[in-house]
Structures are given as C-alpha cells and as structure tokens.
Image 1 (cartoon, rainbow, N blue to C red):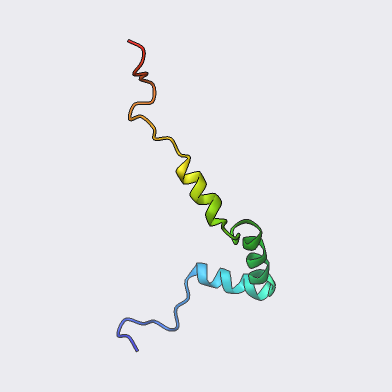
Image 2: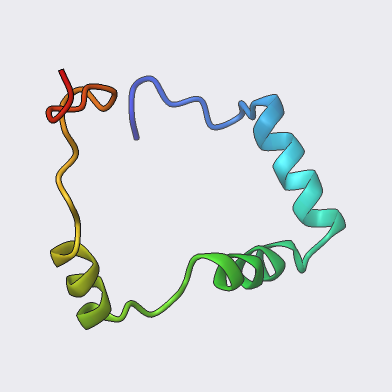
Amino acid sequence: MSLFARPEYTSEAQAFIQQLKAQKPTLEAEQRQGRSLLWDKSVDRDAQADFQAARVPQQPYVYFNAGSK
C-alpha cells in the first residue's frame, strides 16, 4: 500500500460516475455501441496508400503565386 493512498476518499467526479453507473447499468454498453458507429472502422490500406501518393505538396505561403509578378 502506498504511503499517500487515501482509500476512504472519493472525489465528486468519481461519486457522480458511480451514481450514474448505478442508475443506468447499460451505460458502458451504450457507449461502446456509439463508439463503434463512429470510430471502429476497418481501414483500406490500398486506398489510403493511393490517397497519400496523390497528395500535392502545399507551398509555404499559399497566397503567393510564383507565376505572377
């Protein structure tokens, strides 16, 4: 056990989260389901490589046109 550990202490945030999980036990499963809709996607490596190869390097100063003076 750590010298500085305070096992009897719970912060307000921790108490809120514990209360929220007690009121709604399906919360974590719903969060995982929502995450899978937006973030857990498979990556097409070939398409990603094509996108990287097709990139055009940007000039350091975008508003300066080297052809017109």
